[in-house]
Amino acid sequence: MEEYFMTNRLSWQDYFMANAELISKRSTCDRAFVGAVLVKDKRIIATGYNGGVSEADNCNEVGHYMEDGHCIRTVHAEMNALIQCAKEGISTKNTEIYVTHFPCINCTKALLQAGVVKITYKANYRPHAFAIELMEQKGVSYVQHDVPEVHLGMDD
Image (cartoon, rainbow, N blue to C red):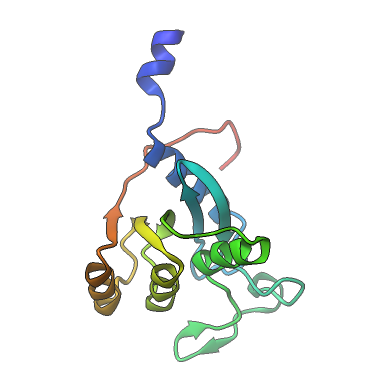
């Protein structure tokens, strides 16, 4: 049993991305079920998922609020993770984020301003050229990561 555990143990990257995948299942905007995990020194300091403003309407309850092809009712997962840290007074300097989708340009700018030094994403969802340019200017690495299938014993 010990040999099985050691050879099949998740890497840190797989572990954090699997958490982001699980967190995405809380999303309330079905346009994209996105989850994010903010990590500092191999510890999760915040999580976020796509959803409406706290104690306000959500897309799954009242529908999307579309403007210029975007649902503006939804706060993005990355922003929710950063906001959670801001509310609790937790520094985001020198952190990493694991997110199920490539961050949009606005989330990228917020992540860079907040001190995130590495962005690991699963789905290459609409990567914005200027987001990539900003990451490269700041020396922030961005890595696409495939997480192995993790079975949690729950119904899919």
